[in-house]
Amino acid sequence: MLMLAAFGEPMPAQCDICGKQRQVANRVSHSNIKTKSIQRPNLQRVHIQVGTTRRHVQVCTRCLRSGKVTKAI
Image (cartoon, rainbow, N blue to C red; front, side, top):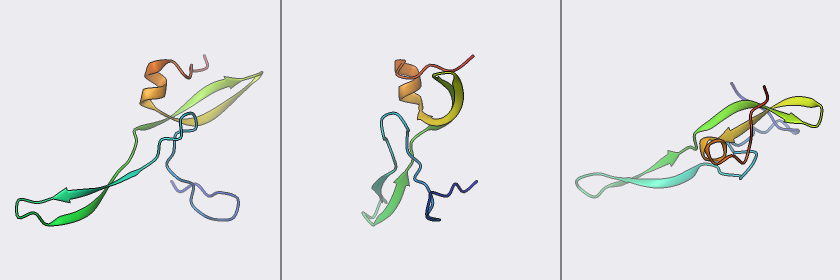
């Protein structure tokens, strides 16, 4: 599912609480050849309570586990 921002550009896979997003790393083979790889955060789409309304947010599992965000019931 591709989410689009205001001007038609794709939204980043980013935590709405802490801002964690993808990292670029090198995958190193046995012969020391380096190729680019992408490490994406483990994001969960959860309901949270904001005032009197419920909304969906993308939250990384570290924010969920540490209690920075509580799920709506």
